[in-house]
Length: 386
Image (cartoon, rainbow, N blue to C red; front, side, top):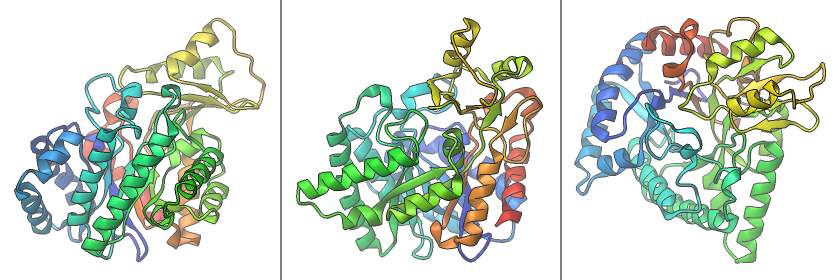
C-alpha cells in the first residue's frame, strides 16, 4: 500500500509457513487477503512476498504459466508486489532453522541462481513506478569462515544480472544485503568496510562499480541494528553518505532486558525456543556477543560473565511493534520509531518499507492473538507515523 507519496509498505509473508508455490499461493489467497480486507479493502494492497528456492522455481516454471496466472490474480484482487524476501532459501517454519538460514550462502552458485530467479519474478511483477527489491543475507555467517572473494564474485554476477533485467524491463531493480548479528558483516562499521573491500576487489579486476552502486545496497532491519546498539539516524546517514543504497527498510522490534535483574533473567527463558537463532548482545565495552540465547544463559549460570551496572542486553527475537513485552522486559521499539522519523525528514532515503515480525508461531502466550489481528495491529502502529 502507499501510505504517502514517497513510500510503499507491505508486511513480509515469511510469517506464513509455505515452501512450495502451491502452498504459497494458498496462503496468499487466504491469510494475506484476510489482512488486506482488514487493512486496505478499497485501495491497492502490497504483498511482501517470501519465496523459497523451490517455490521460485515452480513459479517461473518451464513455460511461465504460473507467473502469468499469478500476475493476473494480483490484478484481480487489487494487490501488487514490489519486494521479495530472499534471505531464507529453504524451510523457515516447523523445524530447526538456526544458522541454517544462512545456507547456502553467497559463496555458492545455488544462492546466486536462487536470487537471480527472484529477480526474474520481481521484474515481471513490480511496476515501473515502484521498481523491485529483493533482500538477502549479509554474504554469510561469521563462523562459516566464508571466502570473501567468492562472495564478491557471486554478488558481482548478480549485479550484472539485475542490470540486464532492469534494462529489459525498464524498471529499477536492486538487491539489499541485510546485516544481522554474527553475519559476515553485522553493523554500520562492518558494512562500510565490506563494501570498501568489494569496490577495491572490482577495481583490482578492472570491473565496473556503477552496477554495484545502482543495484546492490542495504536492507536496513531496525531490529538488527538496534541489537548492535547503533544510533539509527547516524547509521542511515553514514551508509548513505558513503554512497550506499538503502534498498529496503525492515520495520521490526527486538527484546531488551537488564542482565542484572533476576526477574528479567527468568523472563527471557520463555523465549528460548528451538527454531530460530536468537543472538544476544550486551552493551559492554566492547560489545559482548552470544550466538544463541542458551549460550548466554549458560555462562550466566556458572557466573563466568562479568557485568557492570550500566549493562543492557538485547535478544534477536522479533516481538510485535504494537505491544511492549511484559515487565521486567523491554524492547527496541525506539529504533523503529527513529527510522520512521528519519524517513519523514529524508523521505527519499528508501521508498520500500516492510513489516517483518516472523516469530508469531513461537511467541509466548501473552503476546499471542489471532494472526490477522496481529498483522493488522502492526499496520495500525506504523501507518500514523508515515
